[in-house]
Image (cartoon, rainbow, N blue to C red; front, side, top):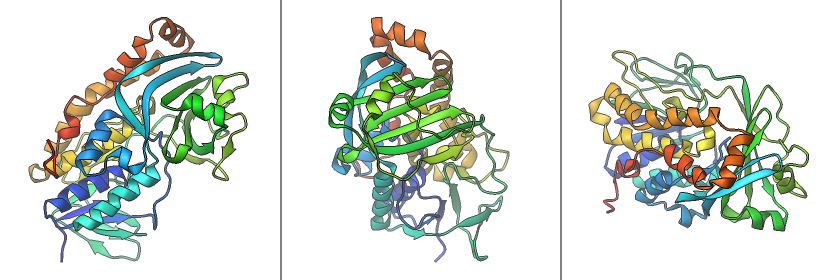
Length: 355
């Protein structure tokens, strides 16, 4: 039976949309290129909006094993400043979250096809699969994350390389990190460090040029955190030229809904990337009948201000910002508030009827 909705990509945005629509009784098919859940380059920070969206989908982060995060620390070299977040957040690996979302979508009635590679997408939203199979639906949602499709390009990013590696920290460093998300400023970029489920530490970084080495400048707080740490993977994951600031503007007559990183890419230091991905998926589910241009206009209204403020804050980050935050720690909480989605975005769609 032809699906009503075809979702290309089973990451947070695509899986959230598929889960919400399946719970409304829509016929949904999800095409996911990976054969099994796996890690992705991501800071793995779930802000309050992301946590609320997951909870409304029946997947509260605490129940998935998410590590609570209540404080933020900004560090540059030996200097650091800490403050309280204006909301409760969580650290949760993408591998666990993505698996939970896709499993829930399947239980709700969505058809989830794993190990399927989409080679092309027509302007009308027909998907051409490896091997020649053509799939069509009444509505198509493009949610391939950082992986583009031929003919469906985003703006090009700066020549920066992103990396990610999980660690088992030394016990004293894990205790010091517990409850915090840390943003470490580097000479050529920045890195984020926090705990996720099972006490694992996720280090994710973004650096100019092509160096994928784990960033741990001698004498820095980050170097102290990683002293004696055990890498849990043989090598880091990597991604290049992420287009921070990308906000899709559809062409006239465009019918495909772009979700997640295909629609909007906020600077990663804000920790709101997963919130935007989940919001885009639920917003698309709620606006499916209104067409892609109306959806993209609504998404731009929701995320545009947050992304502009994030770019301004990113330009002002450096050692002076750390020194100022040491004397005025409330600035860290203010920066976190300024880079959130508007209040209520976590409640954009309510497939479980939660209050």
